[in-house]
Image (cartoon, rainbow over all chains, first blue to last red; front, side, top):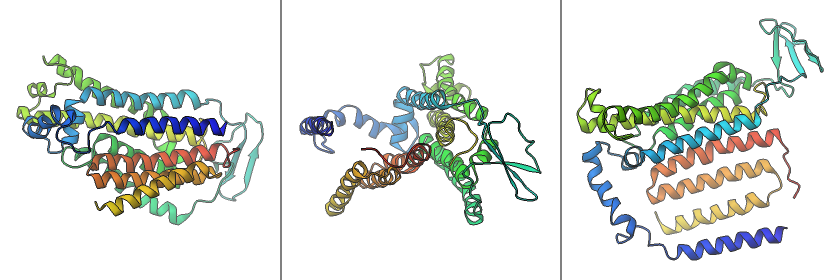
Length: 274
Length: 81
């Protein structure tokens, strides 16, 4: 079996390497890619869209339709993770800690539950006492990470970054919260319903902006039409449309990353995990 | 970027990839994938594709490593083969 795997891998790899010898050289000015479209993007994009970062203007304006479906793919990944892993039946094996005394109660196969509050605390089966240093450091770090994520989203027109990267960074700040405290705290802070709603909201913002452009008389995702409702000059409006789209992507990616982590780490139960 | 540095990073990428498929401990594999992504991120940055490097650093080296670790936490740590 291993031999066959090796054979298939080396066959495919050899074919790919053989095909790549036909490619034009890296940065070749005579290659088809850099003869027709690229000069237009490089020379005209700043004047047309008012966005200094070419990558963002190609990604979110010229090829906006493509990026919309990329966002939809991310959304589908989150949805598939939820459908495959989510279990709604709560664990019957439960551990409670009596907070004043520190005594731990173990409920085996019982439907009974204790009121969780100031007296009892639900805890993980493989619970470790939270480390004060880790908790404090993460508590200080998380707001800065989130602020940086917002900066990456908002500044995507001018510097590397954009909705996708900013969303991933924001999502990883939520994951850091779940790792440094526990999963229950993170799920309490940002509930499953909210996460699901944000996933949909992000994709809807993107598609909604496109439809809005259609209502204003343009084509799908033709941001220059937004000049009718935004108080800005027509070139700057395209940059603003890109920003709106990037915010949508950021929201969707953030929610999907957090949802995938919560589902994987708790095996779909949303109660205890890494 | 100097080609010596490029070659060194490429060697590390291939080393990480080979190590990731030969190691028995799945947690090490997750970390090796993270290292692999980080080396690729350096290569993208060297080519001037900063946006791609940024995505590789945040998605490849950051979040996907966490997902792998979470999946290992919920399954087994050692492979059978």
